[in-house]
Length: 158
Figure (tube, rainbow, N blue to C red):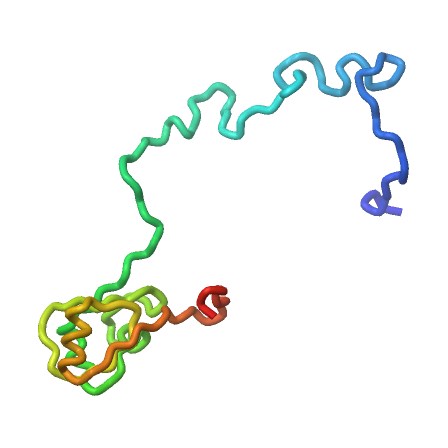
């Protein structure tokens, strides 16, 4: 038999501490002698560093709010001229080098002119872009962000 194979004795009474010297766990009841850890309610805060200045107090208190949401990747209307007659989606925009990753939101912004008919399949576009695309003979379709391979789809995206 090995130490890790030992089983606790079933129905054994729990050890009652602080019941006199002859009981085996009397007087200090296994807590040692004095100090904060020997007292009742001995919990020490998770941020307490033994009297040294707390890390929470040493870190500067910054103004404002930093959002965790990743900002949309911007593509300008004039950049879509090269997609004449083709479909422009996250993957094709990434392959053309217009966006950093196909797995984040893409928004088309109106800057420049569009004469070629383009089928847009991205997450967002300004109202003037949608108007310019339809005027040029193209279409705009709002689609979800493509997932990375191997990632699970969220319940609200199914």
